[in-house]
Image (cartoon, rainbow, N blue to C red; front, top):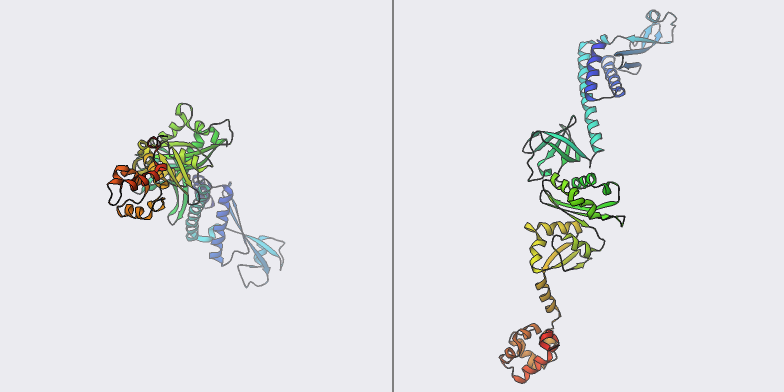
Length: 416
């Protein structure tokens, strides 16, 4: 019986990659549990398992007495002498227990118990192994595709790629070999579930580490990564060695390095940006492929206005606002793009005083305001002829108004 049990157990252990020491501990605990069920205690029992030989030895320690009151812990001198011819009253003697005494029912129960312990052990090992590997890239073969996600075999372990962790426009098929990032381990009722991702920004970071030696060596540092998986990503990089161009290192000769990553991510566009601690410079770079003329930053409120050529505004915003969103997430600033023409117009308006602030007689100011002319911009639009057409404004008043606003006229109109 020992041999049959051990052969079955040893085979299970091999399949599950359980170390001999762990298997031995499991078996010893199981037999101690069997002893407790049969005898009510296991305190005076020892179980020794030899996995290599397939032996299970059970020893019961008893005290030699004249009259037995507790057969589990005591033995008569007559019976003790059959075990040890030198036995005496009051001594401790060790009796060998035949495992067959436990009966078939207990043996079957022990096998079931062992199977459960092996499953628990396997579960704990998987949890421990993969929790220590979170953030690592793994390679596996797709073997099942469901609406909820994709199951991938990695060695002999099954991992799960949920729908929300996939690249939305990527079509993966059964049998495909795929790379993914270990994101988390969920220890749920049905067993541990290893969640992997191809959409997480860390997946892009790990791919960069694999492709770019300078990142792996610590010369180039990835400061931040933001993604809209399958469409576009922005990566901020910095070099600790002035001789190394971080963007050039990531892009590679003729784009070889970055293109390898783009192909892995189903042609996701990747903007590699040189990081800067100066927000104006960083934001200007982050809004690429647009080329801003000026960046105005409010550091306290984490807001920025980006002035762009009129024909670059759509490029800066990107399709459905994607480029602008990614630039804002990369820099940590809420970015507002503005056309150059609008900015110039608003800047001009900002310095133009109101009619009330002009050095004019009060009655002239009142007539201008009554006519709806409230600031210098309105006067500039009307020009001298328009002023003469206003109710109550005669030639002398018009000349006085026009003379007063000379400093606000464009250079070509003032003759400078």
